[in-house]
Amino acid sequence: MLNVAIAGSSGRMGRMLLEAVLADPGARLSGALDLPGSAAIGHDATAAFGRASGVAVTADLQQGLAGADVLIDFTRPEGTLAHLAVCQQLGVRAVVGTTGFSPAQKAALAVHAQHIGIVWSPNMSVGINVMLRLLDLAARSLGEGYDAEVVEAHHKHKIDAPSGTALALGEAVAKARGVDLAEQGVFTRHGHTGERPPGAIGFATVRGGDIIGEHTVLFCGTGERIEITHKSSSRANYAEGSLRAAHFLAGRGPGLYGMADVLNLS
Image 1: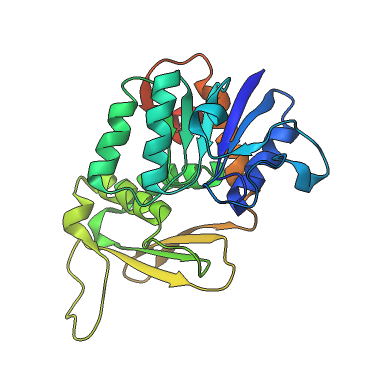
Image 2: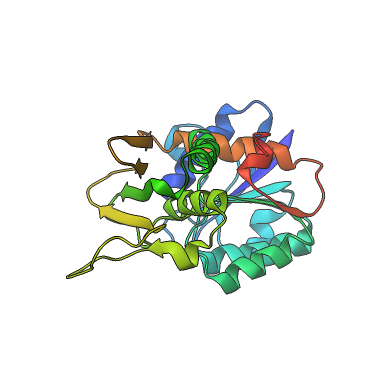
């Protein structure tokens, strides 16, 4: 039985993760974390589902992680790194779906992975990770004669742009082409921009309403266009992918893994 702790348990993604754990016969909820001052603190983590888990939501990291085999964390970079520091102390593995890490924060995450097993992915969706493999094939086959553009759409409350998933898609195209996304990425267009630079990988961002997540990569050639698209209609796919990652970590040693490892796509 895999003992799972959930960070940000009262948020939308946290609730989806709680439901996924409750539905998994091979997993048991061992802890639920939330920010100090949250109205959920002290209450049963799954009471909203009409089912008592016996696990009270807490802001105390030591208490929330005690007895956990793995933490699933979809919070914010600063919070995630604070959680990982305690995970390292307690020997708890972690599945991280947090986006918006700076280069320095990514480096700090990698340091934690020298001590505990961590699966980190900007998107835990199985479909998105299959899409990454399709992009690798398309970019290698089509070459720079096809202009690459990444278009993403999310709800109005999302605070980072482009999304972590959009950046991962752009990185997949850049890697397949053997170039650096930091050099080839075009993230803003305004005014008299001139012609599109050869080899550029463009990004466009949409924010509005309650869009869960939509990503399209266009390869635009002369006389034809290829579009590879993934649309999420529910956050349940992220939760299910996260649990697959949590089970993957069981018994594994330190290291920084991705969903390609979890899905055997490497």
